[in-house]
Amino acid sequence: MVSLGSSTSYLPTLTRTHRPVRLVFPAPAPPVPVCSWWCWFMISRCFGSVSQRVPSLLYRVSLMMKPQVVFVLGGPGAGKGTQCSKIVENYNYTHLSAGDLLREERAREGSEVGQLIASYIKEGKIVPVKITISLLRKAMEETMKKDEKMFRFLIDGFPRNEDNLQGWNSDMNGKADVKFVLFFDCGNEVCINRCLERGKSSGRTDDNRESLEKRIQTYLQSTRPIIEQYEKQGKVRTVDASRSVAEVFADVKAILDREG
Image (tube, rainbow, N blue to C red; front, side, top):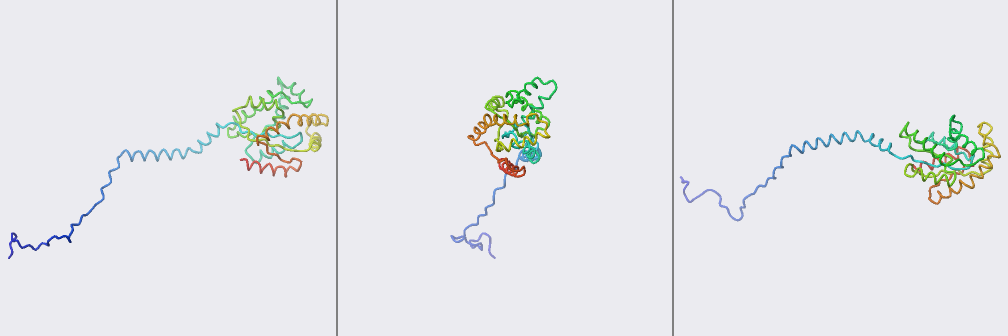
């Protein structure tokens, strides 16, 4: 029988070949504070709310946009009105004809400038810019007031001379953005023949050869230099308007699709 106090022991002797095993356990993760959970909860709620409001926020941004304008120029009878109608059918644009607005104002009962407009139109001259711009600006404001998503405009037959251009730059600077000029290029004789044919049913007093020849000269002397100015700025998109309506619109469509 061996006593526990004996020098003899049955426990194994530790030597250099017997190293103690050291177990390493990862430190426990610190507890997530209650405030962190609350913050994540609130963030997720806010993000969900914002994501739901994004369409309405984008819509409200669009309402604050300035009118986006494309000037539509070309000689009388070049087909500006016809092509603008097709653009309106296929794209989100409003067509404003400077000539139509002037004629409407001329015919409006009680107009203070009706007689003045009539005399200018009869002589084939360009109506004072203040009158034209006031009518254009009023039409754009009324359109956007009715539907604020309609902020793209085709302004047909303007600017027709240097005075028009300077007046626009002075009165509309910072109030509207001109994207580019859509120029319908057409020979004079083709334009005159088209207008004479249109005059058989349009009832327009200026669709006669005498007025047309004056209008063509006014266009060549006053409007072409404006187109050339915009060409130097790289802002003119030219379309051969002597062809059929469908062929011309195919080119117009390609331009609008490219310009966005």
